[in-house]
Length: 389
Image 1 (cartoon, rainbow, N blue to C red):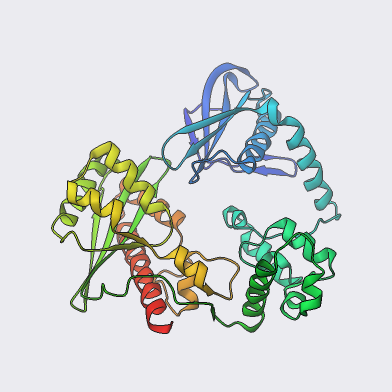
Image 2: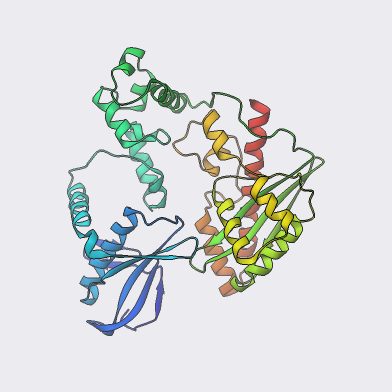
């Protein structure tokens, strides 16, 4: 910052006991303790919405920057996974931020609030500590997709642990206010699955069962910093044989070439083929890439009519003994092992940076292997659903 470099990626701000790690620091012109410039902070988020927790982070960065450079930024910024930038006035969020900061500092002084594990915790470097804390007190937030209000209602009725919910009688459940009987019974089933470590099947999973002779599975790797979808990975299942293909952008500017090669290959399949994926992300990317680069008509019809998201029907029909239903959480429950243990989408992005910046071929290999494992895990989950239910 003192040198006045234009952009700082993944810098660490430290002031006293405060530590912040914004994804980007950008230099702007103006007077500060640094010189004729100062810095603003920006975080990169996969979500397309500007969430309050992003504003909290931005306000914290602004506080730290004011202490370090003598100037407080006026706005906070978020770069979303789809490439658009959101900005917000820090002043408009000042009261909520100050109250939240007071609560955090109170917790650090030993006055801890009730713990509540959410999917947002996965973005935190302390995620494993959060999970350990929740498991240590058998917290109700371990139940997948339970709302805070539901946990409070259960606690008010004397049911304040996963164990307690798993063993609750019908009379005890009837004493819970503000929740339907069906919802209570479903949450109880989740609690039983967690305590017993067993998978509970509620109904057959609504997935197609006629694709074993020809099917496709897709997974996409993306870098929101460079606004590029750099790998379109495809598993082709044909007559019992499986073949993996990677359509990769050798450089960010090669994204269009990779997309065109990917869609040209898809165009070789009959219009009856189905393409499986896990979660909403692939559908969103396809929509945006068709708008940007177009695609053959048959491929556009595939995207519109023949995509099969494995996650929603699984969530409706199967209860897994895990707080989260990400591909890695679910596939690991079914015995799948990634070749690179504990790797994540962020690791793939970092490998991509290493490859395009340093020509690290081992990083390129890791990207492809990680993506191949993702599509094979998706196919395993799909097959398990059809074979076991």
